[in-house]
Image 1 (cartoon, rainbow, N blue to C red):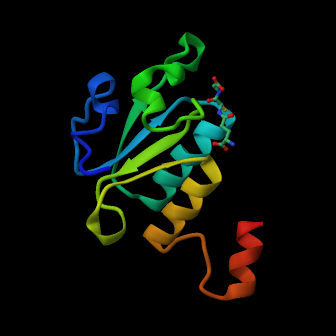
Image 2 (cartoon, protein in one colour):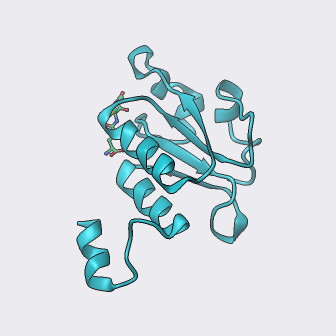
Length: 117
Ligand SMILES: N[C@@H](CCC(=O)N[C@@H](CS)C(=O)NCC(=O)O)C(=O)O
């Protein structure tokens, strides 16, 4: 992904705050994991509601972000190297946000793997 603005997902879910992490989700068990993590870390984000009951996660715009058609997904406009990073799978997103914020994950390798577990 080159820029957030160029991503097809912004056609359906425009970013009002393109400098913030963009969250595409709904209040489901997998969805709330990421919302809770964003709140707890205090990372600035903007939430977009993806209505899976209306199959919005299977539209071309959403599938451009997650070809599996499932929420949650994020775009961090300031990912590694300050380049935009798109991510799906709640576990991967939680791990990414933990490392980005330096919260909820230890640099001690044994504790790190216990957390991943
Ligand atoms: N392994 C995925 C599972 C995601 C998942 O199952 N998401 C559900 C909601 S909790 C979903 O988007 N369902 C809509 C669909 O499959 O069409 C994760 O942890 O993110």
